[in-house]
Image: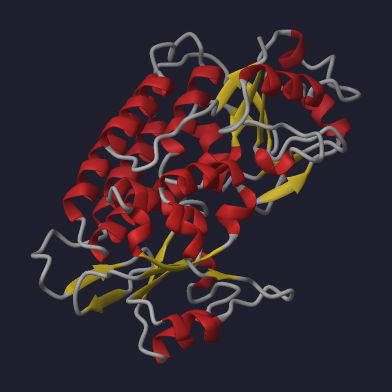
Length: 370
């Protein structure tokens, strides 16, 4: 129980990194996830998103998120084309937002970003001091563009709520951010309480990211999205053998560990390769057909998870957003069906759609093989 309470407390404690609300006309002072204090003369009206998927966070905070976008990177449009289509349907003007392309060598287009003159640049932790591209922030700040760092992927339990609060502060939507923070904390604490009541050994779980029909198996380590398995009460078979964030597991290793639960992640980006498609734009029958093909690979038929029908699919891109609470609920239900049957990710999505999201979640975001 201590393990789950500790994680839940981490979510609560880091939720208050941003300062308390202040008048919209006043200067904006915000502390980002790296502990840097950044001052803006007023709430930002033109925001550069260095991670395009952060439009989802903006969508939680304002009914017209595209109005705030001065420019963004193309990852959301490229990697989550069906979700992008939903945003485009409601906000056709999204096509006019400048897309900053990453160079072939992985470099960020700093000069183009400076030309656009955003009120603030919101960067992921990869651009933070010590990160692989930390010089980007230095150059932007030297040009007079304030920079704040957020994170929904590297340390989601510590940074998700804090990052929403930071974005809310930056655009003058503190109250809205506080409302979402309360919603998120309530749901995550409830999951932790359910899992803490689980007795006996933890089920062994294979979480295969970007699940395909070829080689086995791309899986997370103990950090970032791999932590959701532990939080949901599972024992990830990849956590102890993966020193970095991800690794390629051999089929022999998977067979030897014989997971009790199989969870594959996927999305529209796997459509052409035959991998698991799931999320907006795909019906349940199509998703189940793809999921069946994934676990029909050689060696899978004998796994406990497959033999016992504990095979599930999850929309990958929901994990690296503030909507990761939905993924946490789904995993807890699958891993601990006896103690967490009343966790309802469908009801959670309905509440998110009603209370927060400018563009509602519409589609199949998690599924079982049955």
